[in-house]
Structures are given as C-alpha cells and as structure tokens.
Image 1 (cartoon, rainbow, N blue to C red):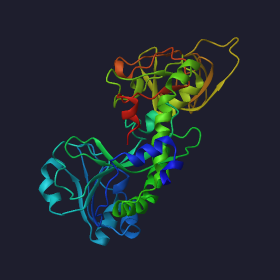
Image 2 (cartoon, rainbow, N blue to C red; image 1 turned 30 degrees about the vertical axis):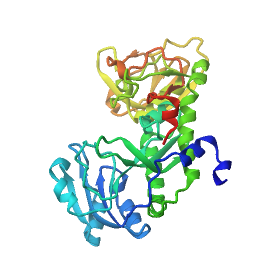
Image 3 (cartoon, rainbow, N blue to C red; image 1 turned 135 degrees about the vertical axis):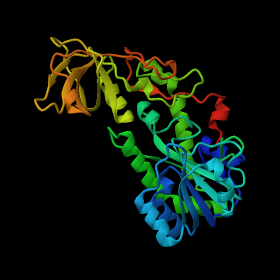
Image 4 (cartoon, helix red, strand yellow; image 1 turned 30 degrees about the horizontal axis):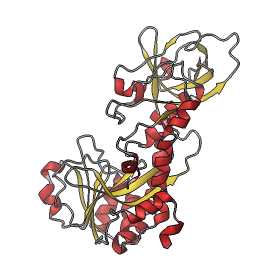
Length: 374
C-alpha cells in the first residue's frame, strides 16, 4: 500500500533486491582522493553522524596530499593521518584498523585488493548520476544533463557499483563550470552524511531521494527526441563509454554554435585553439552571443582584441565569442585566423561542423530494464 503511490521507477527500486540491510557504521576509514578526505567531511562524520574516524589517507600515483586543514584536524583529534600511500602495499596495515566501513573517493578500485579492509563493506560517493555511471560533472555539462551524486557500495571483486545508499541532484546556475559544480556537490555530499549513515544503521532509506535515478534514465531516454531537433549528437567511444581524455582533445571548432562553445569551455574550464603558425592559445569563454552575420568575416577570424590582450573576440558559426586567454602574451591580434580542429582519437572526437547546443551523454549499454535497475 505504501508503494502504490510511488512513480514506476521508485516502485521498482523499492521492490527490487539490492538496498543494503542494516549495517554497523561505528568505525570508518577514509581513503582519498575526494571530498571525503577534507576537514569539513571529517568533522561532519565525527560530530554529526556519531562515527569514529579511524584513519585518513590518499592513494594513487597522482593523488594530491591531504590539505593542511585536514591534517591538523586529524592531529588534534587523534585520527591516524597516513598521508599518501600505495594501496597495494598497505592492505595489511589498513585491515588492522578493523573498520566497519571504508569510504573511498576517486580511488581506482583494484580487484581483490579491497577485500578485508572493512567488515561491512566499501562505500563510494560518485559525482555523476547512476546508473549512468559514465556521466561525471564534465559530461553532464556537455550534455545539458542534471548534476548529482550517488553514494553506493562497491563490489570488492570487480569494483562495480553495488547497492545504492543515497542519491541527490543539485540545481546548478547557468554557466556553472566544472570546478563550481564540484563545490556544489561537495557541500551537499557533506550535508547529507548523517542521513545516509543513519539509514545504513537502521535499514530505513529515504525513497524520495531515489527519484534522481529515474531522472538520469529519463535524460537518456530523451536521446532520440533531442536528436530529431538537431540539438545534440552522439560523441562516444566504440565501447559506449566516454574516454577519460578531454573531449576533442580540448580543441574548439569555430564552426560550432556560440551556445556549445560556452558549454564546452564551462565543462573543461580551459580549452584551446591553434593559430596558423601552429602555436596554441589556451583560453576560456567569457561570453558568446548570436549576431547578424552580414558583412562578418568567416568563422575562426579574430574580429577584435583588447589593447591589454586581456580578451579577444572570434567569429563562430552563429555569432561572436569573447575569449579570455590563459596567457595574455599569446593573445591573437585582430585579423588572425584560428583553426578549427578535430581530435585524432575517435573516442573523443567532436566534428568541426557539429551543429548542436549539447552532446548526448554516452550510453552505458545493456537493456532498458538493466539501465533502470539500481
């Protein structure tokens, strides 16, 4: 009777096995990099969720060391601060903490290595709505998709997502860049900590939050309708998943719409173009606006440049784009011609004549039923 009033997608989640049974969550280890090894996250976990944080560490060859605030907090509260570690060499050391849960971030999951590190399981907060796991912040911006995050268990054998613990979406303002969306998601992830920790302990979950899973599916099902409008196009690898490399190698095409040039810049934070002499200019898009094109030079021509080289304006397919160079010394002068480029790698290539305002997010594959399952 309680389930009868829920939408189809939420009803399926309620009746389908997979939501975790009540589990202990008194002793937790934190393994970065990610928002969960910040001072704010550690405080929230310890002060408001009633959890004992046993250790904090960061792993991976490119992982950033813990910030100074997190290090000082660990020191003042008697939390083991392990710094940056090689996970494959520290399994026994971490297992000795006998944690109930291990919360990981962007840590690459090495099959088998995570076994025995936590008695109740391993949990990750994934910035990107699931089941479209291949839709992180950058791809959500490129695809004009909802921004959100999902907290879920991780299968230690193969690293695949397991039972969902919590999920949420955030309303990002227009022209919100990847770095700014990350901050919004991080703040929300911290604020929701006590709620999902309590749900783990009791086995009672906020089913209204699971609506965002349905939201992700609806976005994917709208692919055909959007394609008919000419607003989007598929840009995916042969495997159906986006490459970890930058879309189009971070190169822009001046044959793109103003709206998509803004979106591309916001998603990557910094993009690049190439002069005729082969030198590159890294920049971000300040503004882009559609204008009457009569009498305008062809796409790629620099229409004007500020005297102090702080900005330059380029003709795009349907208007003018104001660009802010990362290095003012590289600013192209008025009349310069900038190239439109496609990446050589097929799986990240965007056509120079792409006419849409957004990209369809790459599909994860599988049947519709599989895609709707948590």
